[in-house]
Image (cartoon, rainbow, N blue to C red; front, side, top):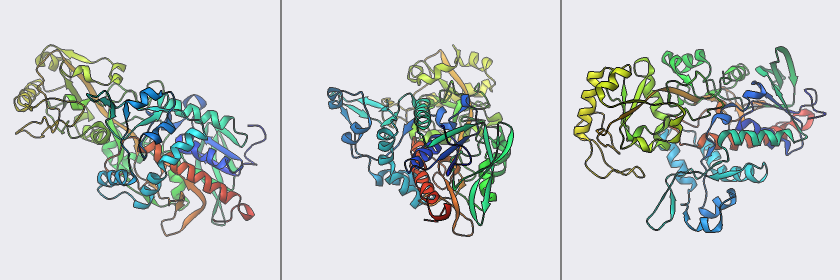
Length: 502
């Protein structure tokens, strides 16, 4: 806004997703002048946040805590909604189970313990609107019970969240946003970060500040960095998120002495429609995802199953299977359904047309697959499918017997044509590894200590997720550490001589 330019910025925030804007708004609460540098043009702004579903996973004590967050639900409606408490220990145990104990305990406890208060801050201080997540089922009594712990999401999803945060920044007299600003270096004087080097609208500039917050995402949009850290096969993956997360600020932080940390070879990778664009599409958002695989079978081009489609609900299993698809020939697989379960597919499947066929032989003529092996696979699956009652709302234990891989739940014979098929590939949302921070969002050095004046939050940081990912954790983690980073950067900027270490 008026009166703020590069010469008067006290805190520079790099990036403009959920974590970065939370940092900017948090810093502005201390009345420091904040400059937000967004690599994208205005029409592509918002990073992965603008493409997300807007789900927040956070602790709470039950219905009263959720009522504080959500508007637009009547008292009569609330009476018929059941919300189980979601305690810190429960979420912490889930994070540790999914990461096989590798997640940083201090960082994990920090985001978990601050998760509810941060979401409440977003609603009450930032004006973010939250609605109930539509993942509940009705009991015989008429009471609605949530299927999982992700109870709230931002109204209008990620686009709504992004829009609200930008609106709050644009009306804040302490914040200015500069688009088309690609940061690729840090200015360091006397061991302290004093600003950034960037190309702004094609012009090389140096922008001075007293503190810098990196909230610019991971390196998933860089094929070369994916190949370097994750292996050559990851060059074949599509990017489910923004094309602007190319890792250049990660490299700048490394050059400044930042320590790499976490699962550098891992990422949040899900099944997306094979016909998706190479990078995330703001118009489609996360609606290219294909998350109903558990109601059918998943086969590769060789016509063979390669994973347990019924291992768990999507909230736990969805971030694993993208990698398994990538391992198949040409990084392609097919989700096959019949008419019994086609009606259960998420509405996002409607963004692209399915491939349909009255028989498996006809299906084999329509897709690039070993048709004979496909028929053999489906016939064997049908013969070994579970005999128990099918219930998509719970882990029904309706499993296959005597075939590998086993399907643990929801194993119904595929014998009611027409068959419905969606081709899928691997879509990388964000990378798990990044730079190391401490519980105050300070960027840590490899040889001990921290990089003075440098803070980070969100997907550029590592140590949180390994192997699996609890759905909705990314936005929460980003908001928690964004808020902390902004607060700590403002403290540092307001210190004696432009940055006394706190």
